[in-house]
Image (cartoon, rainbow, N blue to C red; front, side):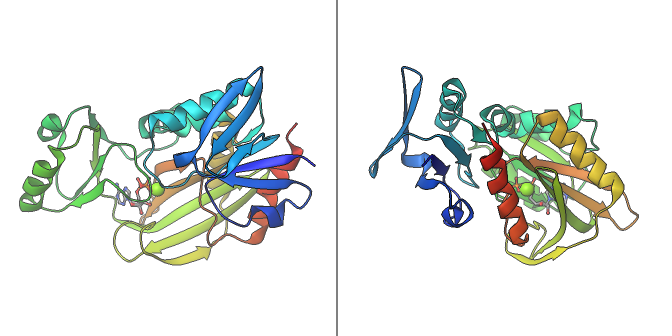
Length: 271
Ligand SMILES: Nc1ncnc2c1ncn2[C@@H]1O[C@H](COP(=O)(O)OP(=O)(O)O)[C@@H](O)[C@H]1O
Ligand SMILES: [Mg+2]
């Protein structure tokens, strides 16, 4: 029986992969060994020699070591969902935004600086959104509504070593996520308690799919050659749409079980 190693993520994958032995490890505590073209993942629970890998590292602090693990996996040739090559492109937020730009998808226009001491030079009319560094799950993101708050936030940003982007706050009517897995697509609208739809989410509703957004999702998926990818879109009342980001390790909460089954199928199909 082949072994699938799940890195981080949900506890339920064995149920969706009954023909495999599923082992699970955390990226935070796993070391990797590539010896004579054989890949081993090692943590306090022991050694795993995977035949396939399911990479489900979610909203944790990215570290250079995660990127190293992806490079070692790619070197090993062990099939991974998404492929290590796809995951490397999504690893950094700016690289990810470059991919959306290459796919000619309508990004929120943003300014960027590599140091917090220059944020004063990239500010824009209130309200705007500041995003510091390469974090997920809403971390490092703040809505700036007025001069007083901006002063405090600049003082706080001073302690950050990360790059910083500033973009207009989109008064969105809908926060939409299109999820593509294999050749299937789902669409969802999300609502959060405050301005971030993915933090303290109160509502997940599956919505009808629109041909133009399906086409844009497919453009991205094909460009990346991704097994799974989600695109987050903000839609204004007037119908204007902006792409916030894509996520190549999207959470599956709120999506039907078929999404999990389809992701398991992607692994099964891998050679
Ligand atoms: N410029 C913006 N205007 C309005 N809402 C935004 C903007 N940027 C992000 N958001 C909201 O905040 C959420 C999190 O932002 P996002 O950039 O996706 O960060 P993360 O990678 O942490 O999820 C988005 O899903 C959206 O609801
Ligand atoms: Mg997001």
